[in-house]
Picture (cartoon, rainbow, N blue to C red):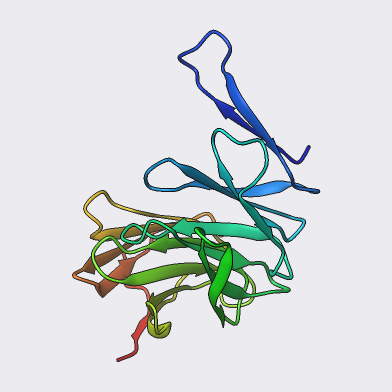
Length: 205
């Protein structure tokens, strides 16, 4: 909540490698680019920063979101493409060309965006939500047509993560459950909760 970002290298006697400071509130989202050359940060000040390791000032700063920026995800197949999600007063998913600092697309997700992750198998992005839907949504990129909605959580989804082979998605929620969703070649088969019962899934063609 001191609004600073510290980058540590625990292999060295002085573990603080660098410090970034450009937020005016709590830093609540951090994500390294796949090649490790850039760091994206989001904060309660509605601000998105993109940094390079060797520079103390951000490459660019944008404040297009109207709420906290917690959800960040770098595209695995287009290195300069970054997705960010806004809180309940914003609800948008925005896409950024980090080479230019420009917003290239924005869509209203109709719900607080709490996490984002790109598919490893297809050109799709998965968003996780808080108020008011508490769902996960699979979107086709770049059309942002809704492919599927994964239902079952009863409170805000806090985190999502893909398995190393990209076939399975796990979601963690404030409802104190983990849910595992099987994905094969971009098609979601089913989702199981902690009692192994099927969770409702609506797939849109």
